[in-house]
Image 1 (tube, rainbow, N blue to C red):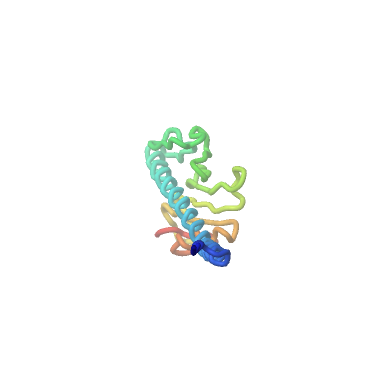
Image 2: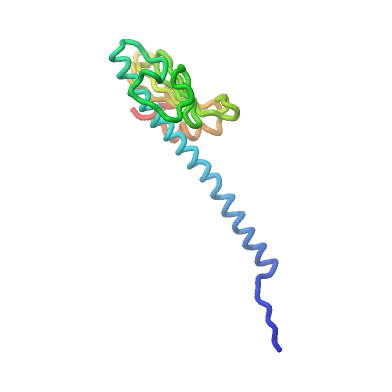
Amino acid sequence: MNHTKSGFTLIELLAVVLIIGILTSIAMPQYRRSVQRAEAMEALTNLRTIFDSAKRYRSANSEAPMRLNGLDVSFFDADTPGESAFNIGKFHYAFSTDGVSACRLSGSSTYSDTYCFKMYYNYTSGSTKYKDLLTCSSSVAKYSWLCEALSSKQLNGMYVIGS
């Protein structure tokens, strides 16, 4: 009787595992960048919505809003909408007299190792005045690619998005 054993040899299995490992090592950094870019786009969308609402509030009340409550928008996942700063997802939003900012939280609810977006009501640089200026800044090199990818120019060390 002829008994033939079919199956894969150890070398063939190792070759397949090696190929899968190489493909994964190429794909993972691109996947992480895609996820970071998607998070940034979500934050920008939320920031623009909050900023537009804040502009309407400023027009009606002649002062800048300092909390999410009182604006004509709401977010179901905002953790403290009655405060001047609150979190939505992985971003920390804060009101100030000159605009609204969104910084990505890193680690234990801090944003020292991350990037921030800020929309200014009015911004002056030298003799040039900007209205509704959207900027991106990063405190670390690992996120500077994101600000560079989204920006159209630099202004006073910040990346300007749009305009």
